Length: 173
Image (cartoon, rainbow, N blue to C red; front, top):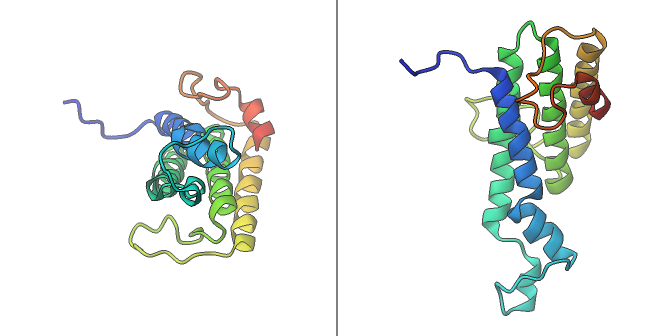
C-alpha cells in the first residue's frame, strides 16, 4: 500500500520552511501589504483611495491560518516525530519560535499557551509580553539541544534554507 504510517519529520520541516517563505514574501502579505503600504507597488484593484491601504481580508486570514496550520502545527508534529534526533527537534523549535514572533508582531496578542490544544477550538489569546517570554523559552530549549552537539541530521535536501548545516540553524536561533 501507499499509505504512510509515519511521516518523515524532515518533510514536515521542509513544508514549514516553504510555507513561511510563501506567506511572508508571496503576493499576499509581501506584495499586497508590505509593498502596497510602502507604495513600492501600486494596487489598481480599487478606485477608492481609502481601500488601497486596506489589505484584503482573505490575505489576513491566509496569513493567520497558514502560520498556525502549516508552520506551527507542522513544527510541533516534527518535534514529536524527531524523538532521538536533537538537531531536528532544535530546528523545529527555532522555526516555531520564528512563526510566533511573526504572528505577534503582526497581530499583537495571539493564541500561544493553548494554541496547540487540538480539543480547544477557541484558544485564549496571550499578551504580547507572554508570547515573547514563550518565544524566548522555545529559543532557550532549542539552544540547549544545539549545544549538546546534536544527534541525527536535518536532511540537506529537505532543509531549504541551510542545506542541513546545523551550525547555521544555531546562528539563526
